[in-house]
Amino acid sequence: MAEPIEFHFDFISPYALPGLVAMERVAAKHGRTLEMHPMMLGVSVPKAMGLPPLLDTPLKGDYLLMDVPRVYEFHGIPFRPALERFLTNPLVPHRLFCWMLGQDRARAQQAARAMLAANWSEGSDVSKLENALPHAVAAGFDETDARAAPDDEAVKQDLKQRIEASIGRGIFGSPTFIVDGEMFWGSDRTHVIDRWLETGGW
Amino acid sequence: MAEPIEFHFDFISPYALPGLVAMERVAAKHGRTLEMHPMMLGVSVPKAMGLPPLLDTPLKGDYLLMDVPRVYEFHGIPFRPALERFLTNPLVPHRLFCWMLGQDRARAQQAARAMLAANWSEGSDVSKLENALPHAVAAGFDETDARAAPDDEAVKQDLKQRIEASIGRGIFGSPTFIVDGEMFWGSDRTHVIDRWLETGGW
Image (cartoon, rainbow over all chains, first blue to last red; front, side, top):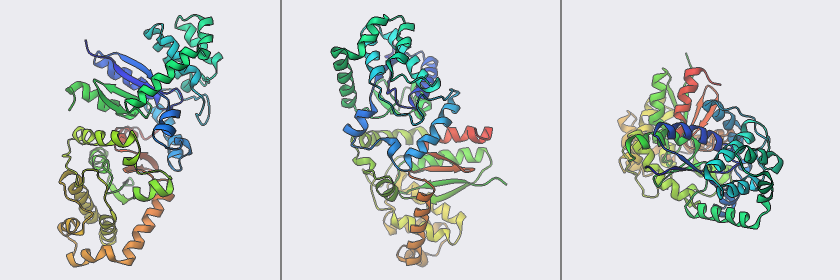
């Protein structure tokens, strides 16, 4: 049984959903499963890399705002972001995801995927608990428990440890894929991963 | 007659040659020509964007050193860089290229492509005039004139103006493609440009 392909993503990353959609196709083609993991650009970019936020970077920020809708269209994904300039605080969905991972990975991933799609394709700001919660409930999690999760100290610590571990593994961007130990950064590399899986790598 | 596809590149960029090779295939498929233009990461990154050099950026620098050989292999291009950590001063080949562009674009591009390939696939450091010059001569330029070009004040000014113009157009990375007015950044976007040309864009 082959190892799952790791998919590391931040809810605030506009490229996470296209990367997930494209990778789902590639993974299915090769009979591989996906394992979703949280990462946080708000930690990796300023703290680990010492860089300003991407959207505040001259030239690159403007390019990104132009490129993102084009990438969604390329992958056939509706583009209707919750916030015009994307930025929001992803702690609520990340903590909810961590809490769900502690219960049941398959259902947690179902809910995380739904939150990501809601934020980027359905204009629903999942940084707000009331918008995030229905996706946890739809995936079969208890509403009262889920509502309490983002304020739970153990859940906060769990997310913190996962983010530190991702930095420790060298993960700085979203999405990042790890395929049999090999790291690939960017939603635009799934065709490379496709050939990597086809050939066994190089 | 369709407009040429613009290819903006820096000789110090490891992704320029794979981008050029991949784009040559896409352009040929669609009956389009390529127009090569100089850009300089040493200006766009620190001065226009206010960022540190990519290789000095924690996590991202290490990823790049691992990613570059993989990209060459993906495109079937030999990877034998002139310098282990890539960095060099590209003023000599850029100025030589500008001087050649003033004489004959087709032959200038032939020489620039040869310099780029020499630096990244043949281990020849073209930041040194003695390594750059043979490619100008092979493309039919006068050796004595070419040798004098990098020290010529008018050539220096020409390069400076071209770099300022590229920044003015929002070009920050290498390679950057401009296809019928649409900008694409990155060697890993040529499959997107392929579909763009096929469908007429979106």
